[in-house]
Length: 80
Image: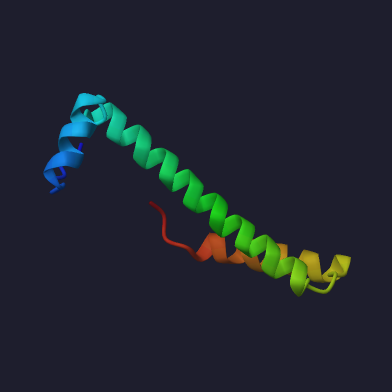
């Protein structure tokens, strides 16, 4: 668990506290929700970019070469 200290304008802090939003659980939920929204935003942007300029289709041989290269890289990668 990490402790985070933030500064808020007084009226906002009072309103948030009154609404029960300044608890660890609520703040964690709000952050998770925002992080999810940001990931979706990046995913949509990537999808739009790919739709605007799609990658050319790969042949079966090209796909197999990519798989082999990935597996070779995994074997060389240091363990955890």
